[in-house]
Structures are given as C-alpha cells and as structure tokens.
Image (tube, rainbow, N blue to C red; front, side):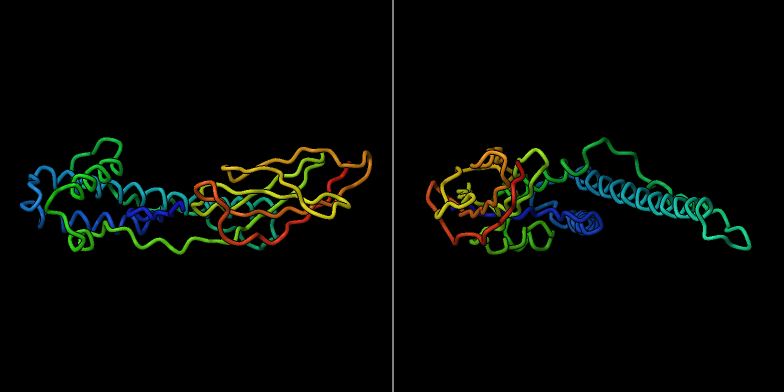
Amino acid sequence: MAKKTVDWMKKQLDAMVQQFDQFTLKLPGYAATFGLTTAQTTASRNDYLWTAYAVLCVAQYEAQLRNRVSWRDYLLDGPITAAAAPVPGTGADPGPPEVPAVADGALPRWRKLVEFLKAHPAFTKAIGDDLGIEAPAAPAQTMKPTIKCATEPNGKVFLNVLKDGHDAFTVFCKRGAEAQPSLLGVYTRSRIEDGRPPLVTGQPELREYTIQYRDADQPVGEMSDPCRVTVQP
C-alpha cells in the first residue's frame, strides 16, 4: 500500500519562520557533533533572518494594500458620509536585518543542511526533535474514497477524487436505466473526464459514479458513496 508522508518543514509561513528561528538558534550547540564551522551556523542564521524579514515585509504590504483597497471602495461607492475618511498610511518599513544579504534559495539551503545532519552517523531522533526537524506522524490513510462530480454544458462530466496517498482508483459508472454499473477505468490522476454522449441520443441521462482505491494493482478499502449527475444532450 502506498503510504502518506509528512514533510518536516512546516507549510504555514508563520509556523515555518518560527521553526527556522529555533533551528538556527540551537544549531551552534550541535556544531561540534556534526563538524560544522561557525561560518556555516552563521550562514544558516542569516538565511533565517532574511527569510523572516521577507515574510514580514510581504505581510505588512498586503495589509496596507487591503486597507487602501477598502478606503478606495468606500470612497467610490459609499455609503455617503458627512466627512472624508483619512487616507491609510503606509506604515514604517520594518528595516532589513543587520547582517549581509543572502543569495536566493534560503529554504533549499536549509533542506540541504537538514539532509546533511540526518545522514550523519551522530544524528539521533532526540537531536531531530530538539532542532525541530522531525516530521510529525502521518495521519491515518483514508480507506473510503471521496468523490466530487460536475457537468459542463457540452455534456462532459468531470470527477475529482481525493487520492490520499493511494496508487490509483477504479471508477464505476451506472448510466440511465442500466441495472448494474460498468467499469469506466483505472486512473492515477485525481481529476478525470467522462466525455461519453448519453446512451439515448437527445435525452438527458442520469449517471451514478462510484470508486474504490487500488494499491499495488489490487482493490483496497471501501467503495465510495455514489456521486450522481445528470448529463444534458
């Protein structure tokens, strides 16, 4: 069975910045363990400082933009007020870090450094936990698929399936007055298209789709709940 994996680097920007901060603060304490130089630990800290600055700048500018867009919209469209609203200020620039500017690719450099640490004979899970670079346990894999289906004016049906780490899934479809569903196909991509015309030319057709996951080319888990759509001719 295919297994879900969880990245050690946090996806949410604010959380990732905090994680990077703690990593670079604690890294010098492990310099001797991994044979790192002061230049290397300082470079990693500088990468963090500029990463944090870049994230803060964009967040601040986005907030300023939202404020100005809101001011503009009220100014143009109302409601009518007795006095003018003040023009939003730009705010003070947070100012760049007082360390040399770093080259592009701060996060790939961090990943490369973490890969080096984890491949080192001295690395342990306890060290990884302390540095904040151990991935959390992956959540349980879904064994009952979730499917969404929608039609387009040209009669095509689009299916979206949550794969959740599985290799593939089998799609079955019952059309119109058919008593039993038939195999539509086995797919590895999450979004698929059914462009078949209705069985009876010129008549709308009710379709019912169900799916089941496949791993190592074998069916696994439960059948999904049916997803029903009406295809127009």
